[in-house]
Length: 146
Image (cartoon, rainbow, N blue to C red; front, side, top):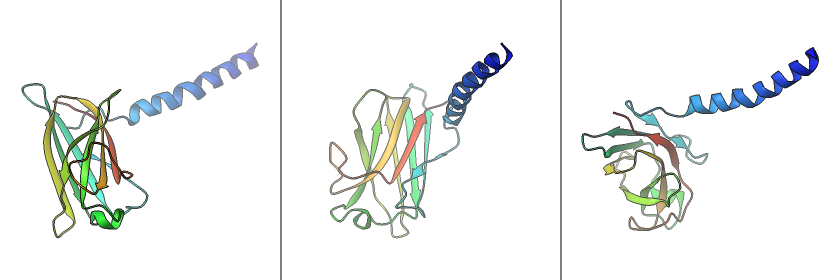
């Protein structure tokens, strides 16, 4: 009975511990800027996203990037980086263009009614697309906070 109990306990720990680790890795708000995950092809780039709930319940989103190559270096037809917001169980939404300056730094400040979403940044031929055409250079899971 003891070895069976130990085996069952080991199985439960094997299932529970990764689940707890996953929960602990989720951002519980973004009072300080959260680091975005860089794609393997852009290791030197850095990006952050800050999401705070405003007085009227909307989420203020502030994205900052640096050391990001010009869009045409990431995709030959790209002229701009587009920021996409994807709420749970909904389609991605184009929330704006992220234009780089001469120092390869860019920013975007916007507002959304959503408080939980994924952010991704993709190189695109135009800032007005309705769906991404290239793989993301940055991603982040975001939960807004007060």
